[in-house]
Image 1 (spheres, helix red, strand yellow):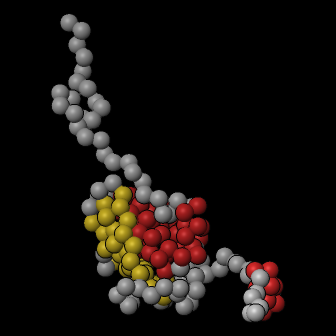
Image 2 (cartoon, rainbow, N blue to C red):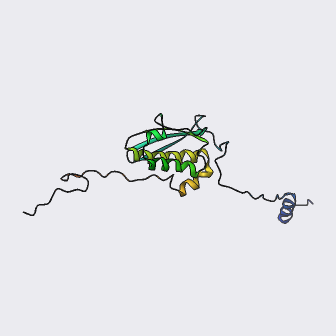
Image 3 (cartoon, rainbow, N blue to C red):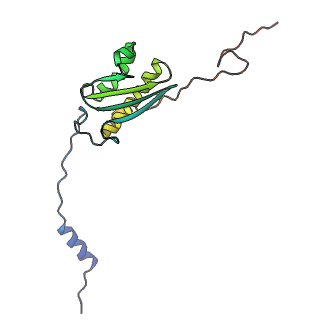
Length: 171
């Protein structure tokens, strides 16, 4: 007669052979993005992010560097004269603690300055999320990964504008 293992004996043997390692607690701190990114860029040098707002489109490229920020081959402060636009764009880098450690190069076209600033914010948020995926939740909480869907309303026929009407004459 052959002796067969019963299911009860095989499970006992499996549990005695396993070694259970105590899980080590991982502490996460919101610090600067890792100096060695968790992903490699597709082209080997830059992380890309595309942002859109109204009629503006911004193609944002980032990489670890000296903190230079160029928009259409001009410095950020030369391109955007409004301090509101400076603050809004740089807030993305400051909240992710990457303000001095990332070189940012932006090509933008279409729309006006405010639309272009909004497009850069979205593109920068998307590029940072690709660079370090652990920043995605913080970027999403602050609204840097959400596209603003508002567009200019079209002009209607028989009116001078989208909502404006010609003056009404009773008689």
